[in-house]
Image 1 (spheres, rainbow, N blue to C red):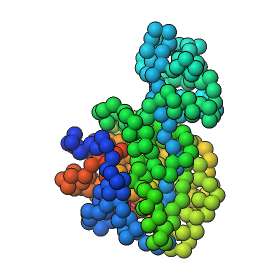
Image 2: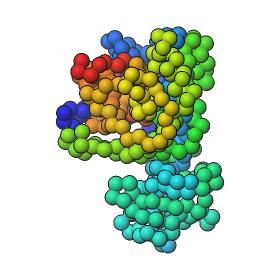
Image 3: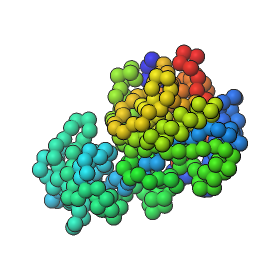
Image 4: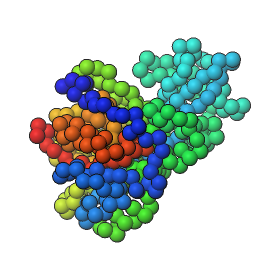
Length: 344
């Protein structure tokens, strides 16, 4: 296995910088048999009564902050909460900052640098915690759009880069497959006997970090915090016991469900960090179908979908998506995949 196995050429005009309006009119490439062109709002017809979708209800926080340490301008992007008032963050220019430095983000909002780590970046101690900290971020921060969106963040992104069911603040990147859902679509799924439930995985900035190792097995994901409730585990296990399929909405839901699954496929309640890195050869336990956006070449996300549906098939499918004009990445279109067993 080599990093080059997961490379492909993507024309720049295939990268979406705004979402489809309305959300559920994003295109969906159904790759279970061949490659059928659909829309996300077709999901009730593509799934079956008894299936259960698993959505990530994390809420993206305005994690980009413009601050100052004295006369020095400092750009900060939070990426992982490690305490009620403490966050790991990437910063520019990090090399000019020292432990004990105070960074001012406003006349009433500051943080102190506690330490630095070559991988995890800065450890910041804010002057407030929990809900008060999130309120300050809402006032002073900007939405952390991915680096491949080459435009300024604006007020539209406050709503666009958030799922309609987001409820648990803590992510610094959106669970992008969920961006396609609308209240009307959720209602239509329920009316068709297709259940949905939620997990929480606070997506970190590490999701955008490139895989640089020539052998991807040497790459390590940054840990992210997640939670699977007893009620969600029971709903997922109950659906499968009755013959329904478990449909993960996005790679974040996939990684969390797999982190919470026992060898027999039963999902257990879970609360804690996961750094599960899924590569071809991985045996999936918890999910049967995956709804996911089209991902970057050489990324850990493309490696996950290749593990789920087969590398050769996904390379072919991405070529088809490019040829048919599908839009890629966070604000782009999506595909529906069926699991293949490892080695097939």
